[in-house]
Image (tube, rainbow over all chains, first blue to last red; front, top):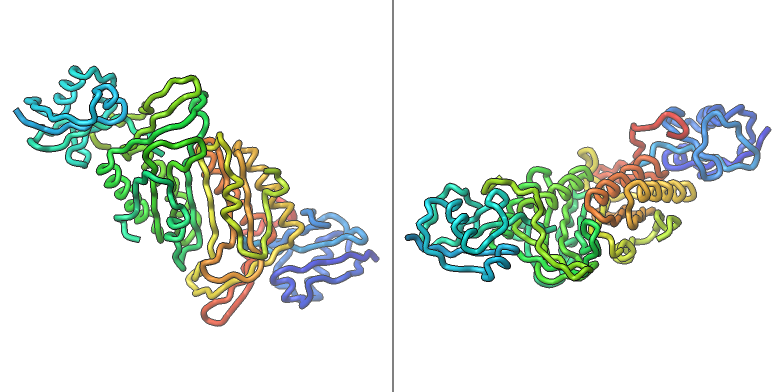
Length: 80
Length: 80
Length: 149
Length: 149
């Protein structure tokens, strides 16, 4: 198992009820990690509408979760 | 003869040495009036590069000079 | 804001804060502003300063017509343009255009269309003084050929 | 102006006068500014107010990357963007983009490209409160599908 910190924003945070959590995961990549968390928290947004970031930089869904990193799932943005 | 007031701006004023003059003209239209004044003052700008205005509104070169009107020859503009 | 105030000539520095405040509207989500500044160069020559001269009666009528037309075409909430006349130094504000609209596309398009039309059609002329001691009126080559476009 | 200050998040009202002063440059003949204001409607619904939330670390890195890239591409003299976070009321300034350039074409193009890219890529989210009592996060449909465009 790999321990990561997961950040939630906007509607994902509202659905999860938390802004951040430590997760122990054996998901093979970030896509699988999102699907696990989506099932756990009941996220409505499909992965295809999100981006993913690791340690404050955009990453790709095929990357494996690395220990002690900070992972953020980025819903469609609406600034400006 | 028709008496009109003629206004000069920018390089036309510099060439004429005056900003305004009363002109008695028998030119059949504003184009002919400009050619007369161009010859008198040595204006470099050909009529094709100018517009003409009468009493503060753009006019057309074929209009006849009307008595007591204010006629302005408008060199290419460079505001902004 | 009525169209009578949509365009003005100013022989003193432009109060941009007051103009900007006049653009406010609760339905406006976008504001675009263009400022023309006196720059220190023109077509490769150093510029020390300049003077703007206008045919005031026609400039104000034509400017108001332009701003009013583009305000209507783009569905703006407000639009205003003020142009300086007289002597200006490097860095001085020469022209200010401000618009507000519901959305940014209209704001950008209208702001740009206004300054383009002002530069094309409003009888204002620039006299530049160059670093080499020369000076002269700018009469760009894009003349329209006929009395009225 | 170094690119580290090209983009900032602000949790208090934006000091636009200071930002504007930072755009000045003797070779700049054009300044374009875009302001996004909180408007009282969205897709036909009345809006009472809103809140912006950001993933600050990524937003600031991505914002600085966008402004720095477009500043270089358009040969700007200066460019800056500041985006509010927190609670905003109708009429409040949500985002400010200012650029200066030698000529107006580059200024308009770059200013618009910056706000377009900020809206597309910077992780900031808007939560709107509607006149009918409803409220919600805006997650526009233009998702890119993959982790990084």
